[in-house]
Structure formats: C-alpha cells, structure tokens
Image 1: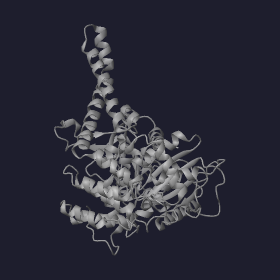
Image 2: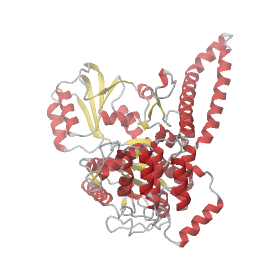
Image 3: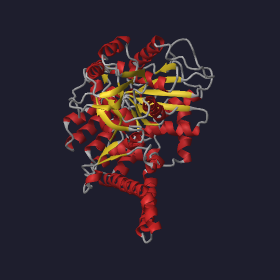
Length: 562
C-alpha cells in the first residue's frame, strides 16, 4: 500500500495510452498539485510531455501538432471548461481522464461538445488526493468542521477523496469509526453508501483478511498538534511550513535569491528521504557529512588537466550540480531551524511541553510554566502552546490556575484574540469532547505501566509523547480495540489480525502521526498502514481549524483567523 506509487502509476498509464509524440498535460488547480507531488517536471519531460497548462487559464495558444492529456476533477465547472475546449479544440487529439467517478449526464455533455471528434479516450483514474509520503495522503480541505459538525461542501469532497484512495489501492474495506464523533459516523456511512452505489468498481479479488478503514476525529487528541517537533519533516512543517512540498524561506535573514523557495521531496532528494524521520541532532551530523562529501568531490572536479578529465567532468557535471543544489538547500533549511530553536528557546519550551503531555506533577508544572512565561525569549505562540497543554491536562484539577495563566498572557501582551484560543481548544478537544482517555490516567494498571516505562528511561525527552493514534493502531493490530468505542459499520466483524489498515483523521493529521505510522509499518511485519486526513497540520493551521470548528458555539468569541 503506497499512495505515491498509486498516483504515479495512474499518470504513467495516461501518458503511455496516448502513444508516441509530443504532448501537453492540461489540468485544474487541484490536479496540478496531485501531479506535482509525485513527479518532477523533468521526469515528465522525459515522457514527451513538453507543456503543462491549466484548463482555467485564458489565452492558451492553439497547437494542433500536440496531443492533449487532460487530467481533471469531475466538477461541474471543469466539465463546462472542457466542453468549451472541445467546441474549439486547441490541440490535435484529446485523452480525457477524470480523477473520480463522472456522471453519465456529464459524459453526454462532453460527447455533444465533441463535434470535431477529437476525443480518443474518456476514463476515470482515481487519483483524487494528494500523496505526501508513501503512507500519508491529504485532501487539502482546511476548516472541514464548523459549529462542531461538517462545514458545507467538506463532507462530499472528503467522501470523494477517501473512496478514490480505496479504489486506487484496490481495497473494499470493513469500516470502523470513532463512536464519540458524529462527524466520523456520518463520513463512515457516506463512504459505505458510495461503495454500495458503485459496487462494480469495488469488485476486487478477495483477500484472506479483509482490509480495515478506521475513521477518527482530531478532537479526540488535541494535544499532538500543539507540540513542538524534533524530527526533520515534522520540524520543518512546524517552524517553516510545508505547502505541497514547498518551503518559503524568503523571510530568512541573508538568504540567497535562488533559495527563497525550496522543494523538499523524498521522491527526488536522497538526503531528505534518508533523514526526514531523523531527529534534529542526527540531522546536524548528517549534514556535516554531506558537506564534507561534497567538498571532496568539488576538489576532485577542480583538477581538469587532460581530455579524459574533461570527459569525466562533463559526464559527472549534472550529478555534481544536483548535489551542489541539495547541499545548499539543506544547509539553508537546517541553519534556519537552528537559528529559530536558539532564538526562541524551543528546547526548554519543548521539554516542558513533553512533561505536560506525558507525566507532570501539577504544582511543579505550574511553577515551571510561570517561570518560562517570564522569559523574554519565549514567543507568544509558544506561550499559548504551554497554556493550552496545561488547560487540556488539568482542566478537571481542583486547583487548576487556567485563569491565572491567561492573566499572565494578558500582561505579556498576548492579544485578546489569541488568549481566546485557550477556552476554544478546551471546547474543541477538552474532556467533554473526547471519547478516549487522552492522558492515560484511567486506572492503577496504566499508571504502573507508565511508571515502569519511565524507569526504563526515555530515549529522547523531546520525543517521548505518543499520539492517541499509536494506541488505537496498537489495540487494533492486537485485536483489542473496543467495539463500544470503535464500532463496525454493518454486521461483519474482523476475527483475524488486520493486515491492510487505512486510517482517516477528520480535522487534520500531523507529521508526528505520520512518523508513528512509518515506525509501525517497519516494526510490525505483515501489517501495512496508510494514514490520511483532511489536512496536514502544524500549530498555526490547527488553530485555524479550532477557530472554524467552534464558531457558532455559544461560548465562542473568536475572529475568523488568528
């Protein structure tokens, strides 16, 4: 189960089916992102695709010598654009692919528009989602929740995206969902209805053990998106922000012009692929090794004395240039991460975050928070993280001092709007909203387990937190996940150990959870897990989700975005 491979195979098949000759790839805004996440432009150029166009852009040139591969979402707007295109075709032949199921009515509209008989192919290729890592996909639907239920338009788009993942991976799963979430139940039922309606598409070869789709709600674990991160991919998203593999470095002091925006893609960058799950300390060492290796190679290329040397230099130059770009990019990214960590005392802040999330005596934690809040280097966003974590952890504690900490934030100049996010997070993911025991203090057995885990020592104090997702998957794989909390949809129940698991998180997932899935896949032979979500979160985008989700609720006094 590899979502990047699934999308790549669809795109390769589209290009192959159009045969030899020069081609243009015509896409919409969303399918452009879907393609660019798995293929570099240079790779597609090698397949005779020389032009990339958007169907909604005006003033495209007529080029009848080109074949047109059209890859679009089957929306009403795209069907209208395509019908207009076919009435006055700009290219010689059209091979049309939709990223999801298209209605018979829409196919009829296109057939009627094709007076000049330029269409050679109309097919459905189910690549209707963004593949981020081999085991991580997103639908890029920010703010899917409004008034603690589905926002208009988000549910049908999520159903389309999730069913397309199932079709591209060739899975017809048993469905389980989080019982405490009305949103999860509605999504589960809608997915099942689509599977029943499109039964012919879901007729795959039966496997010995049925795949499982489990639908979770972000509200069950509001802690994970609040934490600072210390593995490369997660840290870059947290501190710099990753948008479809692109990182904006234009605000970095002294950055060179060609590094103002960089691409981090494990598919096309070996250093990133090897280090994306490593912690910050290891990255520092590995980047030093990369630099030294590059310096050695650049010294050897400096000696061009004979014809043979020149020949060798020219043959190795593309590789050398690529390596030079890789080194410059990662040195810039890691340098900026390092600057931010030191400038904003993130190690001290993160240590306390982990203590709040994982163990923590109340009075000791409260003192440490007050002490850290008084440090001038701590930025408002990290003050908020600490107070939110404290509020979620000690919401029910008889001596909690949430109001006192909010007062400290006010005195530190944190705006009313930002302070109002603390009660908003409690409304979104507090005790009443959760179906699980987020902090694991349910009984003596669990406390004893935690105590022994503490005795063994934690490999790294900055990454000791485990998301709720880890416990859900662990219980699911062991066959111990309670049906009361995660019921099956329908009468069938899985008796065997699951092998293929697709997890979908409503409200967004994090790169920490993607790392959890990656680690589980590597450590659990015979089990394959893919994680999907409406969005990939960092603290900032999670705050936007929370604001949107609790809007319209009585206690909310929030603005539109923070």
